[in-house]
Length: 194
Image (cartoon, rainbow, N blue to C red):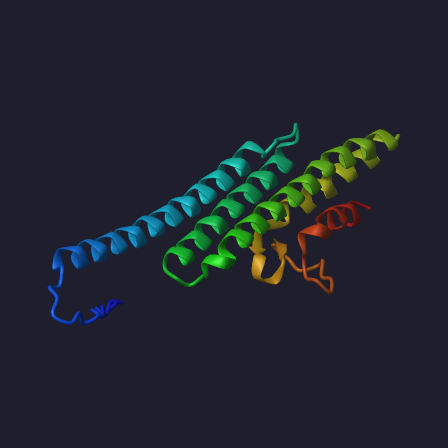
């Protein structure tokens, strides 16, 4: 898409005076340079915000001793990074307004942290549940259900416009009014294992 810029110079008439075209040209050039510098500064600010947020996601991804849970945590991380990249691309192309971009990126990060915390709590839940079971057969059944419920999580999606993040299953046995909101992830795993 081509942009057309129309520049209209209004030069006041000076009675019987000489027009200083050099000063007018310098003022005009300085104004364009200032606009360009402001735009570049804002572009750099949003680029730094995006990079910082992605680095924070990598830094705050903590793995557990459970490989099945780690796969889900890494899927969460990848989906959060992909969502930030998608929003950044839409922002650069003008589909997301400047005033909405930063809050949306911060919301995606917040949803990532909350979902990651829920997943980290699952490791503790698993260990506590195994300790509470005193029968090897029950422990094996629990572990089987636990792994199956973790494997059923296909991906995560982040929707800052809808103020939520979702987890998607490879089947649809868990449906709630809020259809797979991440805040119900712990409840889903827990109910699947009982």
